[in-house]
Image (cartoon, rainbow, N blue to C red; front, top):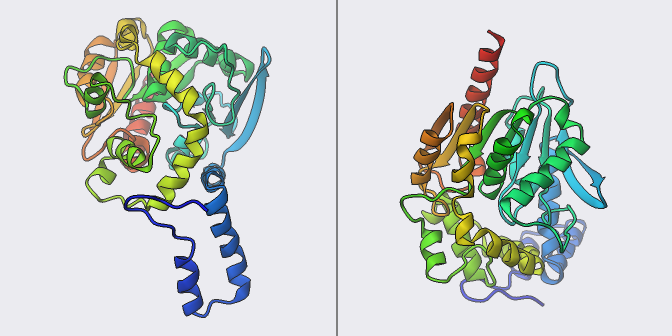
Length: 343
């Protein structure tokens, strides 16, 4: 039986005790007992179930496509339109396509949307020979774009964190394929001010590959400003399940982190930003502890035709922490550009 250490505790008996006291029927207890059993034996299953639920709620259908023997997984909603560019979403380091589910749920239903599991993440294949560089990821994304027909018409490319860096490189490399570009706190820019994560990295600590529940709490703090200041309460039991879900993949995450953390990769987007021709929208959380917001001005000044929006009281996961505000500025940018094109 798995037991949380530190501030956590074995919760297997507590919910059952409360329900028994309340006189809950045996019929209700059966699934709850099953849930407790799963929590204590296969906690990662709970996170997988949550992922499937949020994907379903966003109206996304999970699909697969194979390119050169490599299987991509992606979620799709809607159909391509003659008047509205399709939107392709790229998630960040060690997450998956469901990162965008909450954001997508708030978008208009008439948009054609695809959210991709990047190589080695989510349900996409993990190839030991995969080029894990940012440029390699951009080229791999292009193979996916062509495989699902997104190359037939310029698309709206959106990425966050690592996915933002990949999206920016893609737009700089495959310029004709991108009509609009939106970057949420993208990787690949050397911010003038070091973030909390960067300071730890320079001291030899990697905060993005947690191995203990305390490590996971710290990683959650640097990603979510609301969690950091206590406004977002996440029970240790949920964090424990999320940690159990990630742990089997830590070797891959460490390998990817080592590649992205090489000093010559720190400014990989910054070096290419002048080649981006699509109208660009940069969105950043003011309280970002992963990639400091001071990097936003570099992109605003270095990317032609770039708009910048800073979200107050917001950390690194802006798409989930300030969903309403993020969707509002996102759609304002998109509609403004498309209306401008029509004139």
